[in-house]
Length: 218
Ligand code: MD3
Ligand code: FE
Figure 1 (cartoon, rainbow, N blue to C red):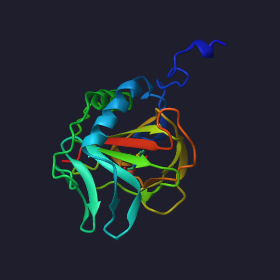
Figure 2 (cartoon, protein in one colour):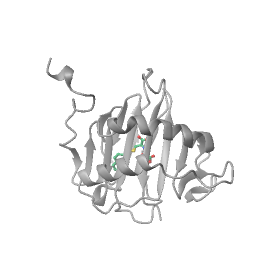
Figure 3 (tube, rainbow, N blue to C red):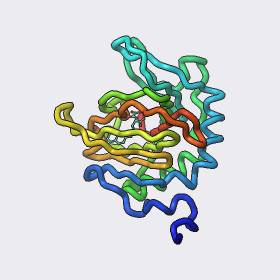
């Protein structure tokens, strides 16, 4: 009965990060108090820079739809992966990083022990049931040790967290609405991915999972 009177967000102990590696942590539920600010900010971004499927250099359409905010945005096309200052779909600059994103990311990075977090890019992924992200490394950023903060909203996902090579079976980490993951330093180049999202309806986001990652790209 005691638990039922606690406000949402304190059911999880986000004061004790779950370590995935020496410099990689899950902060369960850390984003929950920010959700009332995050969702309208995401809506405003989508109106300027809509989610879209992009094509990989190999010619495959990604099952995830993406957009960006901040000074730089990650894009892919037949020519490769890179960061751009403008949305290739509109020629306009990416929408600015909402203050709520920055506040959450700073809190998350500090709790994970990264005090020097400065970010200029935010990649926003939108998954529908069946969407997945195959095992990859993120290495289009200048500083491959700088921390990255990842925020999960909506439908749950199973995150795959592997090693520094493709070999070996990656660990499976369930991520739910409000979870934040921070990784940097020697864990920054670990292979990772997301298993296909299961059918479902989230009360706030419907049949979608949104994940956004704040990064230092330049
Ligand atoms: C990487 N997104 O956009 S982020 C990506 O849930 C991406 O949409 C996934 O990978 C998503 O590039 C996962 C979360 C994450 C967490 C821990 C990591 C990525 C990580 C540890 C090491 C490397
Ligand atoms: Fe990634």
